Image 1 (cartoon, rainbow, N blue to C red):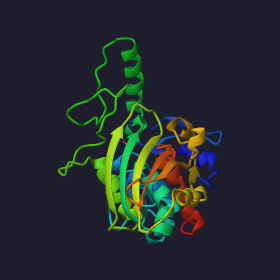
Image 2 (cartoon, helix red, strand yellow):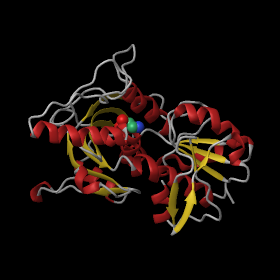
Image 3 (cartoon, rainbow, N blue to C red):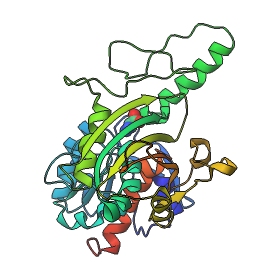
Length: 328
Ligand code: 2RA
C-alpha cells in the first residue's frame, strides 16, 4: 500500500504509519523520507482524513469506529465490514458511486472477487448477466508472506529429497496442513456448513453486493496453486441477450476500464500470472462462446492479487474519494 501510494504520487500532506505494539518503532521510507511506525491507538486517528486499514479483521473491528469518531474515512482491506449493509463494498470500475453512501467505513472486497467483477461489469451493462460459475487458481501470497516462504522452502526441500512438514496451508488455524509445492489444494479458508469454503462464499456474496444484483446466480470453487503472486480464474457466465458473439464480448472488454484484453489464440496470447505481477490491471483472454448454450461464455481472468486485489483497489478508492469531492 505504501509503495502504491508512492507510485501514484498520492497527494499526502502528512503521513502517519501505525502498527501493533510489536512492530511499533520500525522505520519505513516513503518518498525518500524516513518515518517511525507508531503503535495504533484509538486517539492515533485525530486529524486523519483517510485511514487505510490492513491489519486483520479484529483490529479493524476495534479501531475503525475510533478512526471514524475522529473524522477519518476508513478504507478497510479486511473482511470485517464487507457484508454490513451500512458499509459500501467498492471496486471503482464497478460501483464508484456507492462511495457517496458511506458512513465512515468503506470496505475493500476480497481479491478474487475484485478481478472477477471488473471483467463482468461491462458484460452486465451491455448484455445483462444471469449466471456466473467461477473456478479459481489462487496464488499463495493471498495467504500471507509466511505462506510464500513455506512454498519456497518446501519446493527446495522436495527437490532436494528432504523432509518438510507443511504448517500453514491451506489454512493456518485449521486442523490439517498440506503440501502446496507441486500440488493444488481445493480449500481456501475454512469450510462452512453448506460445503462451500469461506473464500467461495465471499466470491458469491460480495459479487452480488458489488454488482447490486441479489438475484445473480453465482457458484465458486476456489483452489490454491503453487504460484507466488497472481490469481487466475476460469469463468463461465450467461448473458441475458440472444445471439451475442464472442468477438462482441472481446471488443467490449478491449475498451473497458481497468481491463486489458490478451486474446489471440493463433499467436498463443493469453493472460498468465507471471506476466501480471506488479501491474494494476485485470487481464482477460480465452474468451469463447459455449458450444451448447447460446447465452453462455467462457473467459480466463488474471490479476495481481496484491495490487488490484488489495493495495491498488484500496488506494484507488482513496483516489475516488478525492475525485468525487467526498474528501477535500
Ligand atoms: C486468498 N482471497 O487468496 C484470499 C486473500 N484475501 O487467500
